[in-house]
Length: 246
Image (cartoon, rainbow, N blue to C red):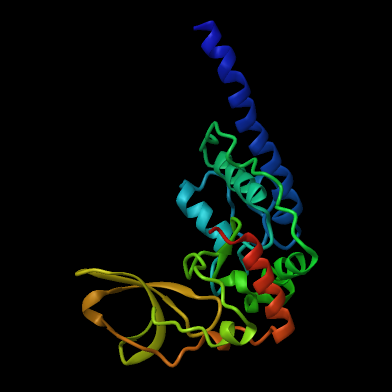
């Protein structure tokens, strides 16, 4: 029993290290005079975070994607995977959730890439472009928001990327309003979809009886690539080829 306890100590220490790292990320990123208060307390312009009863799934979603229509941004494209995991663990600790005893958050450093691919990586996650960056809808190397799923075959040229076929985009009509939609689930009772009217995509849920979904949409991939020139897209393609899994 004593041996088992001794073996568990490094694991528990690792879990506590994640919370400590999360505290540091939180203080640098979230705690400010115009946002959340230190230790998640009330008093700032943003809501209290401590003792709110949040579960891990909700905290992860909000930290990664933000809250549309509010001042809360998503951090999936601006924080590394370890920092994201750490700050989620820290907010969890403020709500009585113990961090999982795992080293999963201690991911390996980002792969070193050739210069063109490295520049492409910067462009893919470029926070200066706001929601006009690729990472608004795509997750690559554990960064970004996985709205559109994994990237399959990498297009050959920037032109191919702009004119990429998107048969998975449909037209949804609800209460007389039609909009381009990426369907998440379409069951007998509920339909869940991403509304692609404007970036970032908004996850919406409707009663299936009120949501009509038809094939095809005037939405085009080129519409969300307007912040990039063709030279930028060629660099992004170099990045995607460099990290693509065969």
